[in-house]
Image (cartoon, rainbow, N blue to C red; front, top):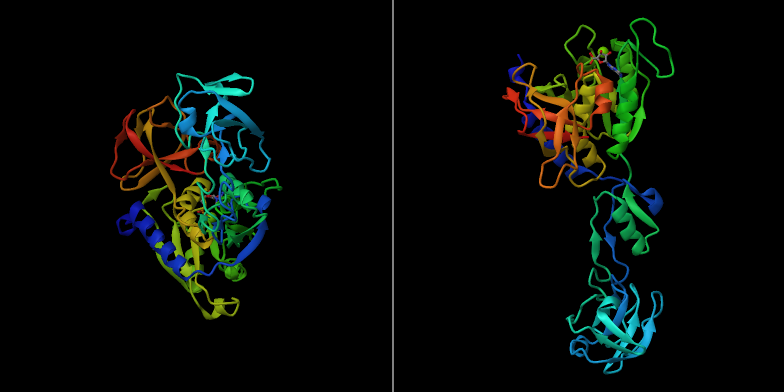
Length: 425
Ligand code: AMP
Ligand code: MG
């Protein structure tokens, strides 16, 4: 039955092709934000250098600016002046002289190198490079414009703003930066058993943890989450919820996509004019995952401000299934909607610390919650061990993990010491 379903790689390829097609037709809106609010946002325009970087040739050491050819002869050089960081460039440096200089200070005109404080013999105003030391032009100096020239692109549009980019923008005087508006992502959970987190579950009820988890995942992947009220497992409730959710950039539905009697999401989406790219993937957890697109449809169109295509996902309701399928298949499309250049799922190689039995249905790629030590001894791969868990509803095991070990569909026992691929959150 499951053999018609795409396998893990095939489904990834479908999603990645969809994401790049989406990127071609996307006109993301931009907004200006204060630099202090820009962390994690996606740059809508390149960061340009307002001045040469550095704006003046500067010393990278405390010491004595000199002409390297003169200093290299180890003769006494007459101290001719001094420049601290923050002072305007001074000089010129007379022939046969040297100039005291501090780290970050502007080089005096005529000097081309800096002798480190620790490398000279200092007799009052006579300075000499120690005989054991050599010096060449350019030593301990960063020339004006060495890093960038005025107007150069320092960082391209579509890049994510982190601490380094914030520093760069600050250095160039950008108190505000242009970023893409975050795509609006509707989160619709479904299930008669679900109650709000502040309520006490009655018999057979559980709290709705997916709404909070998916909102967190959406935020951390650059989206603006909009959590809709939970929908009950009946057609009327689902139809009404889908109408409400029609105006977003991306729709995430949780639950109701398995093969059970009350799994009514797929038919509801079909009534809504959905085009399905796949309705299941050969992975575990996450096999019932549905991916598609809402297209113009009488019922939907009258409620939509415009007729853009809207990708949607039906995520299996088990929390770990939702998380894994989000990381693998939602994140790349969300990144594209956010205007980000390439932000697919992150895989790295790690070494397995213990024998790991695949213990699941054959023919499915498995994702096992695991804990990876990313700072093992030098020259070793990250060391990973699966965490004991009780299936895809085991939130406590999920919370104790920091990655997933990927067990290929054809694999049997994975032996301790073998190299495995892991999925990072
Ligand atoms: P479903 O995909 O609707 O068949 O749900 C599969 C399992 O996940 C069931 O045990 C549900 O109770 C659970 N589940 C579904 N939705 C949520 C949710 N929003 N929060 C926590 N658990 C959920
Ligand atoms: Mg359900």
